[in-house]
Image (cartoon, rainbow, N blue to C red; front, side, top):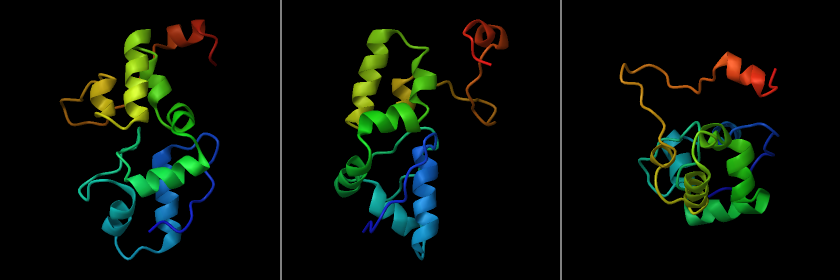
Length: 133
């Protein structure tokens, strides 16, 4: 059972927030925290997005921060979503709020076939045109 949640930092990913919770609560085993947070006991926390939370955890988290704000400010959704057309982005956002489907399928994130680390890449020229330093 979740006794408390630490404050989420302004640019912190949900993954990091929940990892800080796990470190501060003294769970005897990692699986105990997984059972408290997620619907499935076999879930592996997603670094970029939010796994399907169980009902109790979702209610506790929603008291701290609305799901819309979590997705926009504390996941990688804005970075992957900008490459989708508006209709598909809105559909993916709605599905992620309801926690339906897999974010990686909704956002069409390519898989690294060589087994290396996946990461978002931007063209440095395009970023310069967007006014981002």
